[in-house]
Amino acid sequence: MTCVIVDDDPHAVEGLVTYMESFPGMEVKATFTDPVEAMAFLLKNKVSLLLLDVDMPKINGIELANTIRKQVDKLVFTTAHTKYAFDAFESQAEAYLLKPFSLAKMLATLHRLFPEELEAEKHPTEMGSDEDFIFVKAKQGSKLIKVKLKELVVIESKNNYVELQALDRQVITYMTLSELAKKLNGQPDFIQVQRSFIINKHFIEYVEGNTLVMVSGAKITVGEMYRPTFQSFLEERVIKMGKKR
Image 1 (cartoon, helix red, strand yellow):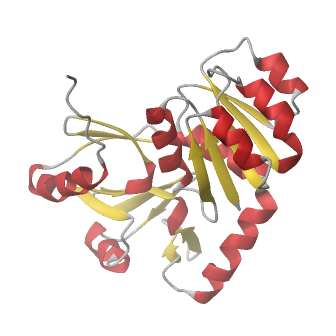
Image 2 (cartoon, one colour):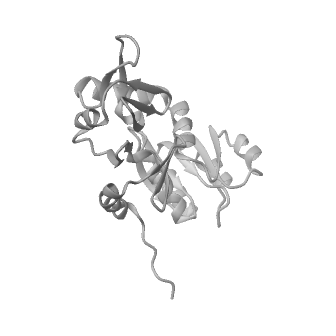
Image 3 (cartoon, one colour):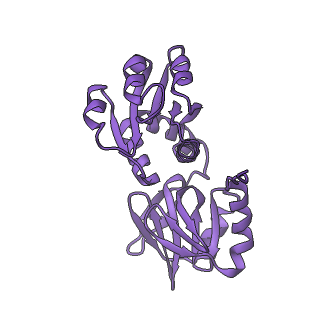
């Protein structure tokens, strides 16, 4: 699946690119802050998904959408204005996301728009690698529950059991956090940020000081011992602003 992002705000573009990294099988083919350049590209290239701002100079998003609609499989408007909703409907948009929207909201929209494509992407990797999912024993009974790592948001230690918070459910299992950490060893998406917490880096909503807020709403303070490692991760990802002259 291929995606094109069009927004005259470079920061909005960067944020959407980061969101797309959390959706398996989606490749960001191009990004544009100039809608005229975007139109030239889209008239020559078909894409699976177009994330399109509305209020832009030269050509607004509605005009652009009407011109290139046949080149786009799924059209999603991303805007801070509700007044364009009817025009978006007229443009046959599949979704209308009001800024600011969360990663969880974006993922829910994409899961709805691409259910078959997502399953096609998941099955080959799940069958081919033991590292894409794990089985954990349920807290009660002998049932073994399959947990997909790409959907795992937070792992929390609670006394003598561990709670796994996924995008759509919670699983409780009798084991220690250290035992689970060994199983996740070598998985780059996961990082331990406190004695009681391991998180999936893709599902961080925002960072404020030493506090993380996950897409699930969980708020976690990074432990002092884990701050150097987490700070290194942040420095790799933070976009630094240049000084104004």
